[in-house]
Image 1: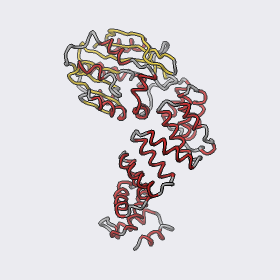
Image 2 (image 1 turned 90 degrees about the vertical axis):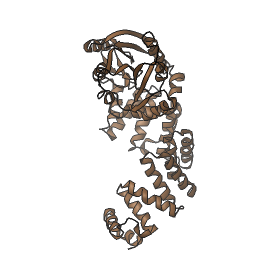
Image 3 (image 1 turned 180 degrees about the vertical axis):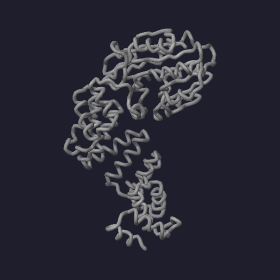
Image 4 (image 1 turned 45 degrees about the vertical axis):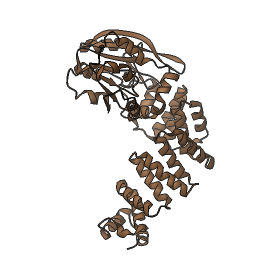
Length: 426
């Protein structure tokens, strides 16, 4: 049976039946070397979400018929699903070379470049798409997301406000992006309104619920799973520059100041840097480490930390997931610089720290300070902790507070953010 016969059958039969018959006719999987049949099968496999098998067929098609633009583009989309973004970009480029005016191919290529961190290249592609098609909502949203990642919030909102809301009624990413942009601009009432609209589209979305809770001032114990990693993966490409230049971030240096009188003179300590990020604190404490382990939930951040070559081990994991299986009395120092404000309540983490620290050894960390209550979700979607809460938790677990210093740890929208720099001893 030929590809055309199967195409005729698709008018009345489900794709799954056609796939089964093709596999029965050609049990070795080669489809009789019939290229048209392989093309058809690849499309059916995509419909049935059998992407790995579809990838194999598409690689055959693009090799035997390199002029098939759709096959190249579909192959690129599948590569993106497997995070093979360099291969994806190559496939999408091939598709676009064949059909240079195809905005879908250009859009997919933009996504691949965006994932590769080549945001300026992606931006040019998206802008070209909007010139060709001013109603391309997804391209405009992606432009705004790039501007947000570059802290160009005014440009982001300018492009988003050109999108008529009635053209994006069911576009969840539009609603969350415009909400986040208004929040970045400090326009919290507008942000809440748009997050609330997003919530009507996806009522079970925990990240949207978390944002609404933060803007309303509701009590929440911890961020939802996936929130912190997605947040920092988005910031990882320009994180250090933003922290040091725009936010006047000095927390790593403040923690080192608290530690200076207690660090060994040689490289003898086993140190775990929780929330290692790009390694800003790791490179400061490295001279005291026999072994320095960096833990972070964001793979994007850790890619930059690896470039520093200061950590002996780098592990992408949640703090509790890492600490809970470690042996008792393992570490001389556990650091957590600008980390606990993305954790929430600290009972579990502090218990892990107490157990895994060696006797007479230290935990050094920062918290964003609040002056009432114990743990508070702020409208920035970070958590603040009161000194009474930290002191009470330390006392409950038998940890001594060696020092607690109030200091400005960063600037946010021109306003100083106050924190506490702690050094605890087991």
